[in-house]
Length: 301
Image (tube, rainbow, N blue to C red; front, side, top):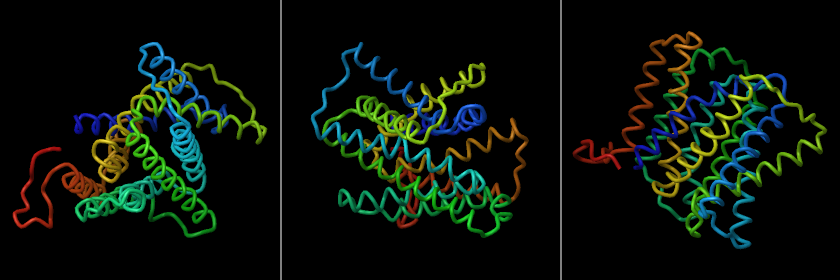
């Protein structure tokens, strides 16, 4: 089950960039994000209510969902969208790949979970692998005030993502199932986005073109309801550090699709980076470890 959820998350999040790209243009970015999570939250909430699967939350449960909505379904996306205005998307992906390391550190701070050397090595390998994959893009990036600003937004977005993971862990430890937690959190996140858009005076326009509407539905249903539920279920089952390795692998899926759609060219650097990412994946999902005397691969978790 863990492997299925992991692959599902990677495949979905590895393709959402196409839908996000189709949304750019007519509608303001924060408004598009609001549409996405308002629709996703309503669909999930109504479905759970109709199936009588929606849990009742106490005051603490609601506050945990408010926190997760703010971090995971609001600030996280605003930061990454802002970062791409200043630095290449490849550099944003490299910064985001550090979520594995941040989750391991935060799990230690929040829950006292021992930091596994194997997971830290896997995260470092994945980070180095993405650096090589995006090396042509990174090598041409000049150090400037704009670069530092973009890196700051990307780092803040990664920290928000990691904090949202910790809040999801708290929810699940309190007996709140991921579907219920996501339904409330997405609606709270959408409400915060709505308030922010109103204060900022952003126009609530809508693009009725098939491309925009199709992208919105894909992002809301698959990218949000299915993708985040699968990922946060992994957080509860595997722990935040191992689950966050998705953030390393889904840019590889995106690049593979870009090979066909946009003519991305694989270089020796890219192949070396892919090898490091897959080695990190081996460390995350098997019992093989460089710290083991035998160092042989074990059973998939």
